[in-house]
Amino acid sequence: MVNRRRFLTLSSLAGLFPSFSFRSPQSPVDKAAITHPSTNALPASIGPLVISTWKQPKANAAAQAVLDKGGRALEAVEAGVRVPEADPNDMSVGYGGRPDRDGHVTLDACIMDEKGNAGSVTFLEHIMHPISVARAVMEKTPHVMLSGEGALNFALSQGFKKENLLTPKAEKEWREWLKTAKYKPIANIERHDTIGMLAIDGQGNISGACTTSGLAYKMRGRVGDSPIIGAGLFVDNEIGGACATGLGELVMRTCGSFLVVELMRQGRTPQQACEEAALRIVKKQDYKDIQVGFIAVNRQGEYGAYSIQPGFNYTVSQQKKTQVTDAKSYLK
Ligand code: ASP
Image 1 (spheres, helix red, strand yellow):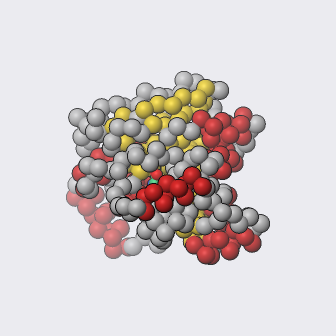
Image 2 (tube, protein in one colour):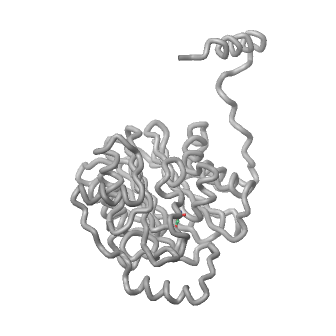
Image 3 (cartoon, helix red, strand yellow):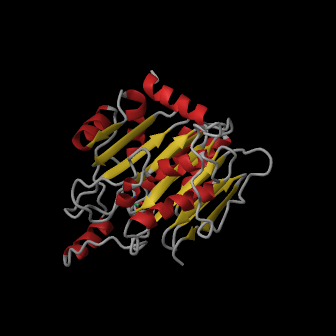
């Protein structure tokens, strides 16, 4: 119920100041910093579109295959991100992901559909496809997020198989790291393949998914932005969707993906929204040695991407074409 007193206060303000608007005006954009307004609008019909963080042509192809058959964006993003989850050579996601500093692979993932339904798992071990567990949380429980042992037990109850996700390659690197055990997140050294994916299906509906093994050699129990709705991923079918990658702590402190979608709601293009969200981090956090990247798409099929450091790229698939593009960045 609308708070009557507040309503009256606002109404009288509007009476006193006829130009007073209840809609918040757009905050001024730092035009000097917004150097690359999106020119990526789709020409005629939007058609199916897939965009993911980093170089992910195989994941995009799997998502596109679903969309080509008339499938839902939700199905597409799940199928898409399952590809790097199962790939032992993708060392920031699922099977083959680098472990925490105690040698355990712990996974975070979330998914969001066009109706605003969301599911998430954090600190999940032994399950190759956390994204599918996140989807099961969304569809089969009254909750949004399950964590750790509870998430694992739920996964097992749903028929997911318990597996060892630490590959010999990841274990060897970890043992090498243990010799110095220095932990300092450095931009891009991890050859990230944490995947955030957004898709628009033939009905014009948007869904998104995000999945990761998190930062290499993180503290045990650490959860990043990727499984947090509004941080690593946010979708509002009326507006668009956004995903983040990079140092999750900075994304969480600024509700990064939610911020990008809200900026689009206020009229920014996806490109402007990604840039402004990254600038918010730059303004308030110590960003010098760290990377954060955003991707976004709006209902019109325009998309954008931006990162703090150079080196972030993203993959777009539409009309049978897939392209990997270097994102513009704040630092050159
Ligand atoms: N955002 C992820 C995290 O902080 C890592 C990544 O994007 O690679 O866990």
